[in-house]
Length: 151
Image (cartoon, rainbow, N blue to C red; front, side, top):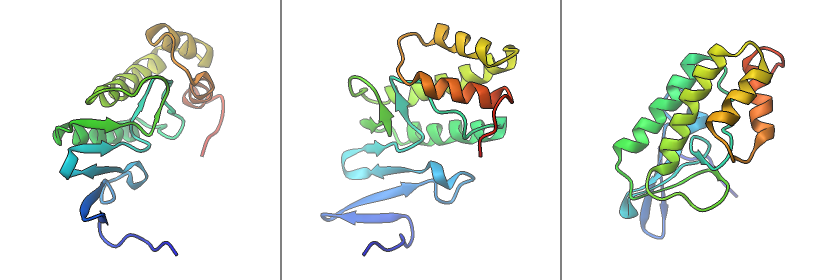
């Protein structure tokens, strides 16, 4: 039977896997660091090739925390980052981390400018053409503009 993790480190085949972020303001946005191969398994905080799910980060503070998590990943200088969600070819190096951070900042900027979800969706599609996951963008935009509740 599975047991709750005690501490922040798992052992697998003699190698440590550190779960980072459990002690922070957003423990649901953790990631795994495998030091022996300098790899981050990004989990929820890292995406690529699709619109980023923003409905769970409704405040500027929650988005700052997310960006801080991405900065923690960069600080490790990983050789590889496996995004929790991605469409298309596996991103190389920290490309998925950079994509996710760029998307969060763009969403914040465009949300402030847009009068409603329709304008926000159009602006994000213009800034990030050819991404999958349009349903995530549509729902996130409605939540951001107060047209829909999400908890």
